[in-house]
Image (cartoon, rainbow, N blue to C red; front, side, top):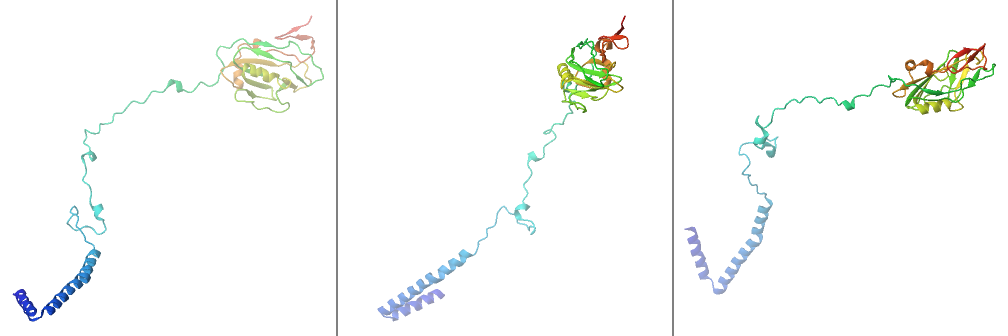
Amino acid sequence: MYFERLKERYHDLMDRQSRTGRLAIRLSFLALIALFLSTVVPTMAQDLGSTPVTQEDPSAPTGPTDPATPADSATVPAPTDSASPTPSDSPTPVALPSPLADSTTASPDPVHALKDQPIYISHAPALVNVDPRAVQMTLPSIAFSGSKYTLACISSDNLRFDILNKRLPNPSPSDSLLVAGDLSSQLRISGLNGEVANLLNSDGGLTAYSTQGGIAGKSLYIRYVAMSGPATDLDFCAASRDERRSAWLAPFSPARVAGRLCLLWHCTSKA
């Protein structure tokens, strides 16, 4: 009804106007429409574009959520079958027997004197002539052989022995050539047979000092012990096979001493 009346009034108005007036009214009407389209419509479009459009996530829960907890953390994935294995998935562990000790890794035997002691061959002068007033002297060269590793035990009741740097107690030259008892009456040298002999004869040779009076008439003993490796324990010296063979008596005196002639292994009365 309203639109029909408005339409009738519009036609009455247009019929009363002249042709020029009707044209002016139409132009005015078109101008109003253009002004509306150029101002109002862009403003409405700008307002609609600046307003964010929120779209509901169809996968989000419809119920209220905890404001302190994000929505993403509230969604917990459902556990799968692999997360909870059945007893048949994990076999029961079986206790294995402990491995046997490898015999090749066993600790080696400590260094010891060989059970079967060989007969050593020693080369040394049978008689040494010295000045009766001397209190020290250097022994001649000594050579011996009998085993790969040798412990040479040099002892005396009234002599002290000195090797290498004289008048100084020398330590062992290396881990494979050991020295003990330097500047004492119980000197021990142990190592490879050839190295022990070379050490005895180095720096001028083995020097002996008398602890009581002159050196003439004194004697010393050298015992050779076959070893499994270098060692200088004094107890090993007792493992010598035969002291009569492995030790030699060296007199530090003229050929005639108190009516007795001292040879390599023993002393005999002179006729």
